[in-house]
Amino acid sequence: MKDKSSLLAAAGDNTRLAHLGHDPSSFHGFVNPPVVHASTVLFPNSQAMVDRSQKYTYGTRGTPTTDALCEALDALEGSAGTILVPSGLAAITIPFLAYLSSGDHALIVDSVYTPCRHFCDTMLTRMGVEVEYYDPLIGAGIETLIRPNTRLVHTEAPGSNTFEMQDIRAIAEAAHRHDCVVTMDNTWATPLYFRPLDFGVDVSIHATTKYPSGHSDIIMGSVSANEKHWPRLHDAQITLGTCGSPDDSYQILRGLRTMGVRLAHHQASALELARWLETRPEVARVLHPALESFPGHDIWKRDFKGATGVFSIVLKADHADHFKPKAHAFLDALSIFGLGYSWGGYESLAVHVNLSDRRIAKAPSEGPVIRLQIGLEDVADLRRDIEAGFAAAASV
Ligand SMILES: *Cc1c(COP(=O)(O)O)cnc(C)c1O
Image (cartoon, rainbow, N blue to C red):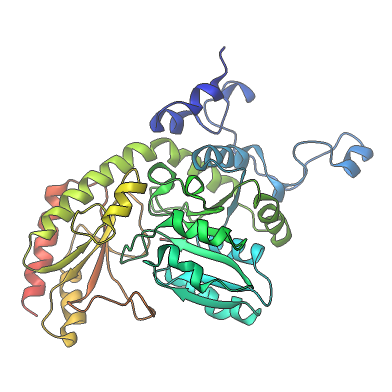
């Protein structure tokens, strides 16, 4: 048989997703990897135990199941190594703990995932790290914020809830001139639509809870690092003892097999609805990077290969006092869209976004921001559901 790994390296996304991560011939020909539930691994003799001279040594340090997922993610991200952690939030906090020390300064994008800000403002600050938030649109201008003790620059594009695009390559180049590590939360795009390491990012972060899982039933995160930054990330994983569970690892690998076809559907439905929403009189603005009208569209078009299924709308409201009642009337009239946190599953969700934590990338002034996750349902049904929401909001 020909060497499959070299064929896969040149193959298309869906072919790679179907075959990456597990070699069936390594386990009796079974197409899927075994789910290894493990703490103890036995050694053949006491010297092997001292030398740890075998591939697997203890359950926290990897199993054939977690390896299968990590190898698939490394191939997709182009990374030197990947760790699996218990949540997407932990996929942010663990690399921050790995790369930052007391006395360091960290630059965090202001449109960041809100629980990341909470970690920075509480635990990280308490540990003596100075945190500063920067404008998502700063680009190469980040260099003016870098101090002698700046060690880490955290990016997230598009930004959570408001979808600001960042010039990742320009930021990474500036940060590297000062030897900072550049991290990116790449959850929205997945490695299919953006490959951070190709743009100079050192560490790519994912809530695999979202599209890799795809079914709203798993919480897990992954962190993938380039050659230079992998040893320290791996050390942090071992030191903190935060490993991925076997069943969840198996399910995430299972989710990856269909992620390409799911994303194509999410992308097409979300864009169709976003274009329709742009024409609606009830909507002040649609925040979706693939729309030509969106301020960050040029960066998205230049750097990204696609858009996934999450975007926001700004409902029109005459007065700030109406923001909340209008948002609630809209949401409470929905029946196919569920009201719930997270996204990336097969089902559509809507949430009234709270942007009160923003310091620089402030909330739109025209009305409340509603984030929509467009699931795999039929667009016509979702459109009817949104129309019911508009009708209810109109009476506020
Ligand atoms: C959801 C999300 C996370 C956190 O993932 P959890 O698994 O829910 O902890 C991190 N970053 C982004 C951008 C997210 O949307």
